[in-house]
Image (cartoon, rainbow, N blue to C red; front, side, top):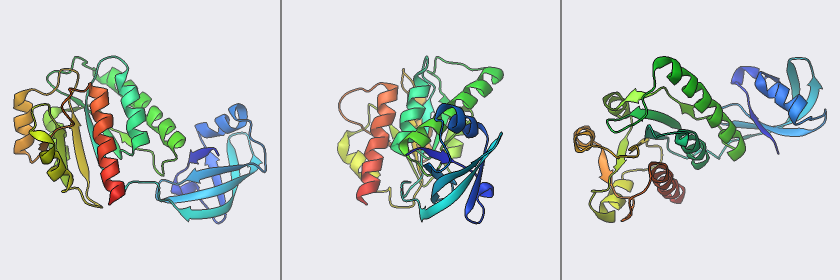
Length: 246
């Protein structure tokens, strides 16, 4: 069943008014007709089963058939701080991070990041990345659309991560899986988690030291060295498994 997002202000008594880009998609791409059903999330934890009731030029009227509390979202907010990779890898990383349950994705310019975005390019990139996040959220049945923030410098990202309860930084020189297990045990239901992933060249020693000084916990993802895109997926998968088991 097709899944869409609206803002809480678009939800009324038994009705939803849908506006924006989804209207054209529903009318002209999906060619949905009155009487057909769809799922709608309002981004606050409510999910609605709706019947398409009326089609207008720039809006749709939906009749709410059923409503329930969304239980799709992880019990903890996971923030992925991703070192800027080369090429279009960031698009894949965002798509899969959203599917895996990330709450927010923060692109980070580290010392070894090859990519350098000027302000004009960065704005266009972030808009594109947020569109990818929205598409992935719809596809995977998320209850929210995870936000992709603007590019941060490494120190700025560390400062932002101080707002989270636990900060993890996968690092190839981290000591064994026991340390990783101990770090995961600090992640309990409701705690927010920051995960830092380096770019293709990894983090410099000084960056790891800065992160640790700020409270980050170095962890291992295994004995093999992973690509930047694989490392993020692996860390998120481990975290989501851990949270689901709780």
